[in-house]
Image (cartoon, rainbow, N blue to C red):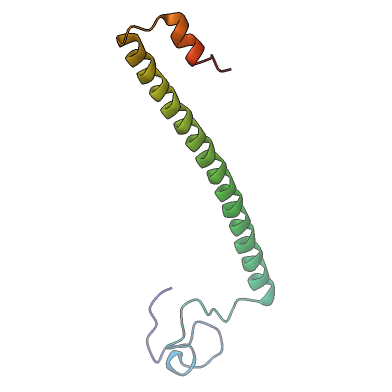
Length: 104
């Protein structure tokens, strides 16, 4: 919004001087905004909020998938460590395979 002199005509179109009309009002209070404009603005805000909420749902789903993947990876590493330790202790591959059945 351009700067107005205090004695300039107000930008809202009221015919009053700026200092007697809109000086000191917050910039978002635009007197030219109609109820329809306000309604449209609220509708767009609501749509944006719904998109954000949908995005949060996707984020939660991806987070759960990553958590599950990380848990499986940790279990795999733990199993591989145990397999190598049993191998070091002299267990045969068949004995180790019986202790750790294959997963699908």
